Structures are given as structure tokens and as C-alpha cells.
Length: 316
Image (cartoon, rainbow, N blue to C red; front, side, top):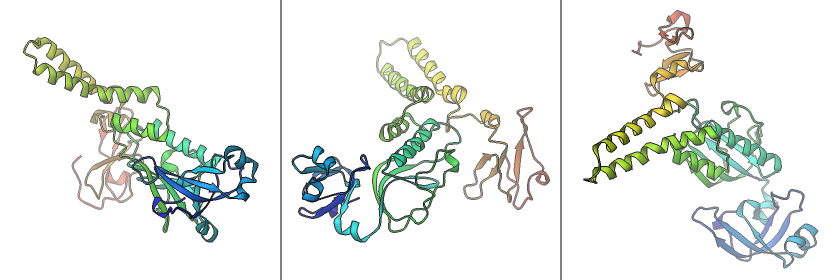
């Protein structure tokens, strides 16, 4: 990969097309740099191919004039490629760490599966991967476990810490908030399919805003009937309750729905935030409260039946 500030007219470039892994590396001289947007990677390079590259059938067919447009993540300065053994990746940073995907058929498949799984579980109460940032990256990884991982549950992926001396250029960011705007923005940028359920949730989350705008309009219309404003407000309140009553969306669920989730067998107070946390695997050094599945009612679990009490008892 090459950064915009590295590009100089007349410099030598070497690269290989990730969309055509069977082609040989090509070389050429930079003749132009064309910007296409505001981001650091929104540009392409125009190169004049050398004679050796033009003798490759794949290259001569697609570039009969010997001129090629190259995206920054497909090429490197010739001297860098020759002296520093590095690899280009698409890197995804989540709250749990980094995953890396090569520009190969296997890497693109693995990346699609990972991003689609995030889109499919976006509104689930257990989703905790945000914010998310996608980079074009280049560097050397000594541990290859986070590279092109096979599809598993999101929590079980082999996330890694940010590598040292790694080049990271942002493609897009998303806060992954439980809003229709962030959800649709993520799916658009990541190229994910929107499930019918998640599409309904996004529409439902947007609906109260539309009714708020309509109510504001009615307030400024003297001729508007009072019953119309009342009906609009009532409909808006009903829509507001849908995310927790019908879909159980993270950030919108009611307290009564929390014990119904099998993943919430225990509750404890997080030491760092002083907030109540629900889960199936409580830490060993915290006092916990258990939930009975057969009655749906909370029951205070004896400290002896969970783990040893080490701190003051918090009111639940």
C-alpha cells in the first residue's frame, strides 16, 4: 500500500491486482495522482507500465496503451517492496481488538462473512463490538491467527492488539450506536445485506422522529384539530414502545425483559463503572445475584452458592 504523501511524479511503482491474483506483479512510473474524495485513501495513481509488464498477456489486454490506473492499496514504492517484507490487509478494529483480511479470494470471503455477521446481530442486546473502524493496512504480522479467520460467533474471533509499526489508513468509521442512521451507514459502507427483521427495526427507530416533526408542524397550525394532535402523539408513543416490546433492541429494552434472556443468568456490579452487568459467566471475585428461569423472578443468590464475597454489598 502507498500513502498519498508518498506519491511523487516519476517514482517507480510495483504492485499486483488483488482482484486478479493469477496475474504477475506489474511495474511502472507514476505520471499522475488523482484525488476522488476527502479521505486519505480516496485517490488513484496513473502509471506508465514498463516493457516487462506489457509483455504479460493479462496486462497488455487490459492496458493496450500501457497506461494503468492503480488504487493505493494495490501498489507500493518499488524500493519498499524490495527491501521490507510487508503485506497489505483490510483491517477491522472493534472494541475487542483487530482482525486482518488479505486481498485474496479467501480474505474477501472471510471479511464479508465477518461484516455480515455484525450487520445481522447489530440490534441484539449482546452486541458489544462498537465503535468499528475499517482500515487499509500494511505491515508484518508475526501471529497469523487474526488473519482471514473462519466464521464463528462474534465473541469468539481471535481479536488481536494493534500491531507495532503498522500502517493504518482509515476507509470508514462507525459508532455502531443503536440508531437507524448508524445501522444503515454501516451496511452501506460494508456492503452488507439488511435482513427483513433489522430493516423493520431501523424503520421503527426512525418513525418517532417523523411523528415528532409532524407534531411540531401541528403545533404551529391554528386550524389543526386537537384530536389529530392527540392521535399523532398516541401513535408516536406506541411506536416508541415497539423496540423493546416486539424486538428487544439493545439500548431500548425494558428492565422486565432482561431476566428473560438465557444469557443473563447472573447480575453483578462492574468494578470499573459501578454499573449493574448481566451475563452467564460472573467474575469469581464479585458478589452476584441469580435469576430463576422457572418463575421469571429474581432471587438473591447466596454468596456461598456463587463466589466468595470480597467487597461491600450493592443494592440491586
